[in-house]
Length: 216
Image (cartoon, rainbow, N blue to C red; front, side, top):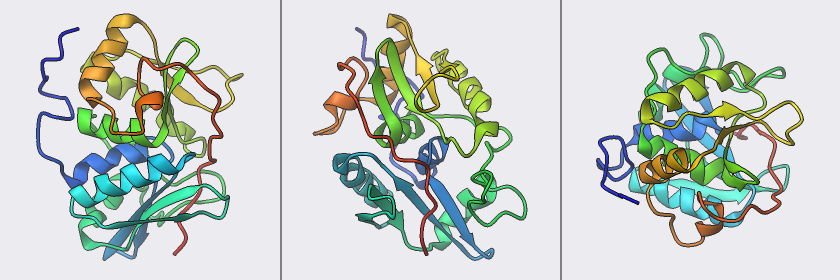
């Protein structure tokens, strides 16, 4: 397989706060504090994901803490930060400060372009091998986003589809050797401990956390 770095791959540019939008593609949540600051959080199913993501936050200048969410799963959460406000303003619906009862309050921004770095964050938070292909988890509380995220993958050469209604959890599914190779090129090599959750690994049962809001 040719691992030449593409213009869109995670290694193509230095880390930036905008990469954290990949967490909002899955079940990550961003909560605004008025129009002055925002907090980003994500609940994950395994401790290694939380610790790897915390390092990714810190590499981007956003310190994050690992704690236990109310559901019992690990959670990565920032403090309220001014520099995360642009992310909140782009991804939260007008007038919505955070998760609501019926949905998460998120929407895919107009003109959104997915990058390899965002895709890597998505895989670290909610990616796993499936029985046929690779699954990128999506937010069950934001069904309005699912089709648009599938569309966002297409320009990267990763044609995908949504899992059917019988799936245990909703996800974007990538199948086929070429598409999986393109996905792997985009997200780069797995960090230590993530090998079993990366494209090409054998599928295994997981306890997927339900999308949960951050607690103030």
